[in-house]
Image (cartoon, rainbow, N blue to C red):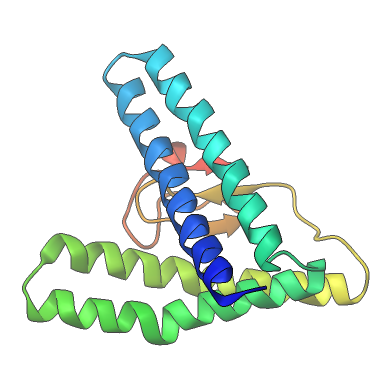
Length: 167
């Protein structure tokens, strides 16, 4: 692939990915404000942006075999834990940005769990087995993630169990 096309696809992938997430957040806000149809429209268009991002990712060769995808997940989570978020957190602390500090702390704690989960998943796939799990629970405030065992409250931010989202 020519470098300019590759760069354009990378930029388009990043833009579509960001639009997807932004529109999902907008959907949540519209629903809270009492606009269920607008919320649904944001969700629908977010899905379209996801389709675009996935098409770009395929053309960039980012989507590979499952075992390679898991390793990519591990590598991405570990980079966030070891390099990205510590650097971002240091800047937020230096600048006294309390909200950003909390956001970065929440992300680091969740990413540690995600990395471990991907490592467990990789072991299963290497044995050509699927994961043994019933439910995955996510804290809607900090992203804390747990499999099967729902805590009484989030160990990172203290949100009660009934607020967690089940997958």
